Length: 171
Image 1 (cartoon, one colour):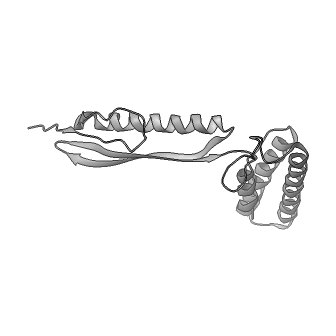
Image 2 (image 1 turned 90 degrees about the horizontal axis):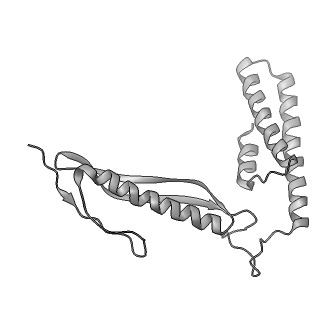
Image 3 (image 1 turned 135 degrees about the vertical axis):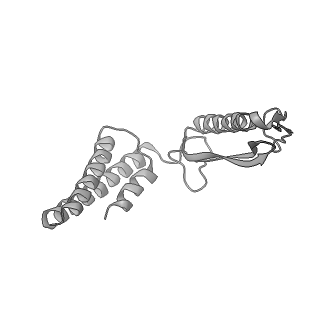
């Protein structure tokens, strides 16, 4: 005999949505729908601040209820990056980004020079490396950093964390 109990849900304080129940067979859709709405709210909030979501996810707590695997809870986590913000992701008192245009230009030149130094270092390592697997790895890292350099040269705004990650992952 198939058992399909109705599950009740509560929303977090201040969370928009309707706290309606759903049968166990439809619970995953119900919870996922609410969490996707939360994710979209975070995305909208980030866009309003001039930023974007750099990472995140939707997590469902799945348990057996009746004859079905049901979602009994959900959680949405996101990490928002706002370009030009420091420490807590705030803007200055005037509402303008903390970095001015002069500072931004010199920061970009500094990033370019760091990336170029790393590329040069990798080319030196590549010239002396004998192992084919290591040579391939070094070539891939050179390509990644060259793409980052090209993006900066063409005025694309690359988040600072991405450049840092590229530089840190390179041997």
